[in-house]
Length: 321
Image (cartoon, rainbow, N blue to C red; front, side, top):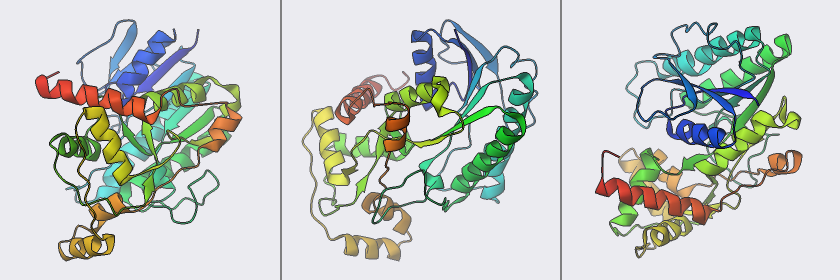
């Protein structure tokens, strides 16, 4: 039975990963920032600030595998005076500190959950793949790419296996930010002028990401590899909205509106990046993990959206749940 530890265990992905690891009978050690909704059969350690030189020595002695989820996440309106330094402090230096301690403690494998933003922001003529030259565009993506580089160096120097996973936009029970906002709009039956958007985007349901992480943690063939993961087929924004509406048992109202005019109006009010996220493609080729590790997403997008919609409706009934 493998002893597996994960950082960020109280976060969106971490909670789901903890539950699944317990079901699959791993010995689980979880590093968390708060003490809410703790699970049975998990050994917890509270870590307040992963960036402030945490002493990991006393907690990693019997660990075989670490899954590193904790991070300073991408935010739309960052009020930090120096966003890059803030991201590097957590996502680079915090990661390096943990990885060095893990290698010293004899941890065999380190799974790092990075981001597809390392590849870039949008795709045009072909999908993103592991062979792309990284083109991180913002401070968050740069910090993740710098962490990947540092981890490969530690891997070479120590022999600890490193596996890197780059997911796209995630969804599932507990999702926040843009995806939760879109759920809210669709649930309220607000018309959206997105019927003319043909660009497609890859997504990943949290249950599929959790399964991919566990495969990357336990499959010997994953050692030293980087994998891009997604649900499979990419969807356009009108398709996603219709799928969401179906999962919410609501009609969808998607109206045609020229994308060029939409972008022109966005430029006038300084919201081009927001429109680009709705109208530009980001498509992932996840064939490498499927072929090398024989991985297949256990859930369809429709199943994932149904679970997400059910959670969302329950949260409206009980906002504190």
